[in-house]
Length: 457
Image (cartoon, rainbow, N blue to C red; front, side):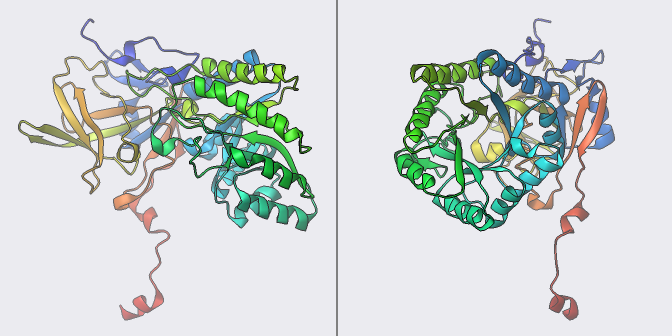
């Protein structure tokens, strides 16, 4: 047993799944092969083919409950965790997070519609976006969904809609607090230079402007400082900044009741990652808001937060089948799989790192070989792992990539006209489809050949 180096044998943290690499129901059967949610991965691939997305229901629900319990424990006022649906948007995910008492944030009419179809109550949905269309704003207003105002363009159209309908609209304002985080520059959204939100220096002018509108009612503030964050200090600073802005808004007659601190808590993708637990993150945010409110004799606002990745990422895995091998003597060995950048664009986009193992050798006993795991797409950069140690493997073996629940399905594409994989939910030994596998014929569904070309042929 000493030679078994797999992260699967480490103690799994049930209370804070974001601190695990693997779903909390991961196990190794008597046959030495990997199972998730009581389901044999090998049997699932035999039935549903590969590549294959798999979500573990127990991990999803534990992540949701960790946020709920931490908020109840550390924040004495009202609170509402809101799922950042961009991480993984589906009718199923909307239904699950709603059943756990979560709200949802959306950034398009498609995400709004998905949330409503999944059963999320209108009053628990917030609508984000830096360039909302008229159609999207009208959809939100007609469905009584709160809009988070990101810029002057948003504000002008909301004022026009509220005046034309002669109805009051509750809004929240997003601003950039100017807090830097040690994260990838493409996902750092809280600095002064950001496409999202109003500059903090503009807020007094904005508050005055909103107070002069007839039907817009400012009920909340929103700020978000980035993603995959392991530091707690930036969120401690954020709470105090936001409370101070609530006080400033009072000078203009605004009684702000809701404070949305965004999300951004990181997860453990690799053994080198060490994110704070969900409870540590919630405790830090709550203490910051409580301290600032107490110092200023301010009534506690409803505390909102928007976790996405830390809810769904660890719950998800992707299974690939090994195909071709290509050895370049003295340089590297390529191992190709039946998916890649169309089902997981994060490595080529963000240089993201993951953990993986062989399904039939999850302990990775005697890892003798280093491989570059390449996708099947016609791009040299379609590489899932630049270098990974694996035990002996062969064509037809299955590889499990962990931590793919967030930003894989939602960012997937049909590049090279490759159909998207199926997605399964596993729980207590049962597997159910939550997204059907596309077929090549599905990809032709929206193609149109102009009439003059048909006549010519």
